[in-house]
Length: 62
Image (cartoon, rainbow, N blue to C red; front, side, top):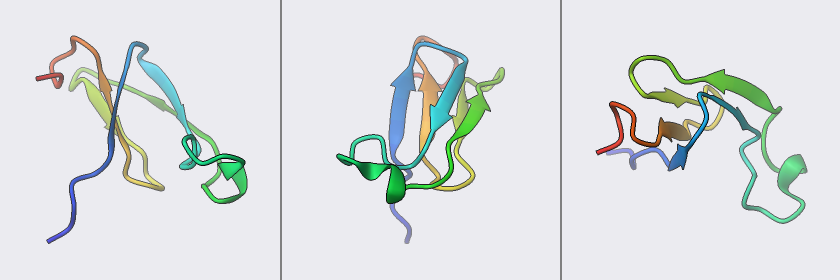
């Protein structure tokens, strides 16, 4: 079984992901920066690293 994707709660509908935000000097260890838009589901998954961004107080924030 695969582990659940890493989740990050955010306050904005538009987020950026580079896959290495918490790694010091991590840009070289991550993936190209992509900008993602959270829709009516209340979350969006990064296509590179599977990190899930959940909109605070949105439909997916339980």
